[in-house]
Amino acid sequence: MLLEINPLVLPDIGLVFWNTIAFLLLLVVLGKFAWKPILKAISDREQGIEEALAKADKMKADITAMQNENEALLAKAREERATLIKDAKEASEKMIADAKDKAKSEYERIVADAQVAITQQKNAALTEVKNQVGTLVVEVAEKVLRRELSNKAEQETYIKQIADGVKLN
Image (tube, rainbow, N blue to C red; front, side):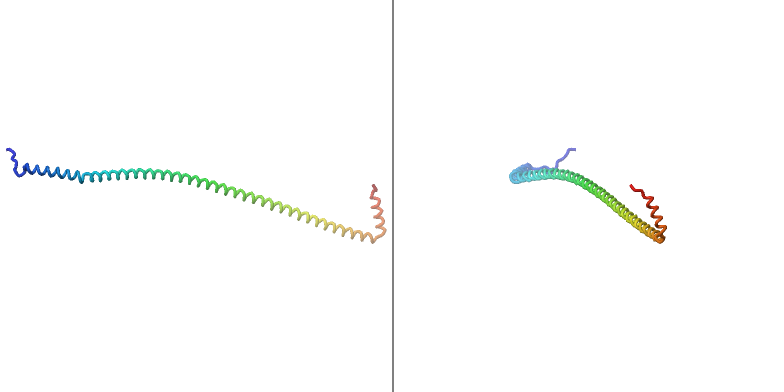
C-alpha cells in the first residue's frame, strides 16, 4: 500500500509564493517599525533590571553598614551603661563611706562631749561634797570650840598643849 497523498493537503505553489512574500514583507515591516522598539523596550527593561539589581546591592550594602553601625552603637551604649553603673556604684560606696565616717566622727564627738559633761558633773559633785564636808567640819569645830570656851581652865590647858606642839622653824 502506497501512501496516497490527498490533493487538498498539498499546498499550491502560488500559495507558497504569496505566503513567503507576505511573510518577508511582514518581517521587513516588523524589522523597520516594531523590531527596533521591541529591542529598545527589551534593552530598557534589561537596563531597568540591572539598575534595580544595582540599587538592591547598594541597599544591601547600606543595610549591612547600618547593621554594623547599629552594632557599634549598641557596643558603645553597653560600654557607657557599664561605665555609668560603675560610676554610680562607686558614688554610692563613697556616699556610704562618707556617711559612716560622719557618723563615726559624730559618735566620737558625742562621746567626748558626754565624757566632758561627766567630768564636769563629777568635779561639781566633788566640790559640793568638799564644801559640805568643810561646812560640817566648821560646824563640828564650832560646836567643839563653844563647848570648850565655856570652860576657861580647860581652854588654857588646851592652848598650852597646842603651843607646845607647834615647833618654830
